[in-house]
Image (spheres, one colour):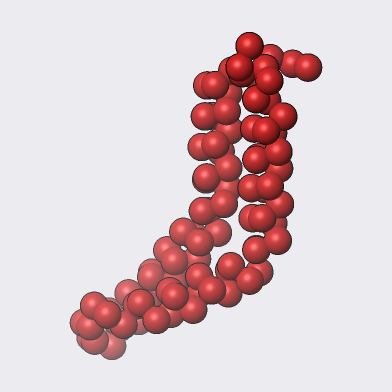
Length: 89
């Protein structure tokens, strides 16, 4: 069994956090930019108009990438559970 330090686990946790949140953040960013561009073209300056498309996009991303996100998170939890004996020593 290889030695895994706590800093390795924290580093991996940050990597997993970025991997899991990137599809949601990217879709929200793209939708926000598109809506802002359309608002600029049409001179509609309503601040709440971006929320509904972003929420719909987040739900679509959740359904599309749900299995991938779950498998990444499960693999990470499995790594942590398997590393517990080497951390405790």
